[in-house]
Image (cartoon, rainbow, N blue to C red; front, side, top):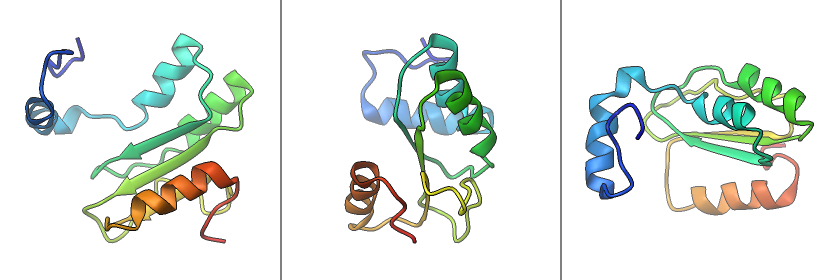
Length: 118
């Protein structure tokens, strides 16, 4: 069970409500730390959050420990600015806002290799 009280039997509506209730405790870097601690070999992390902290340190730590040049996509649908990714790292993509093109852009980035931003 996740600390917010989420179980495998919960429906998406219940999960959303519980996450919103626990929002101040949510840590977007948790996925990278968990993958590192469990020794998971992941090549990408996609994080959707309204809490936009700097995540590059956690990504670099995962990359060093795993030896995998993992990509990072951070989508902040509710903000006008997000500094969670490093614009100088071609394996990171920051997305601000959300519309019908975002899934395609993210898929192209993950499939392609280098940043769609430049």
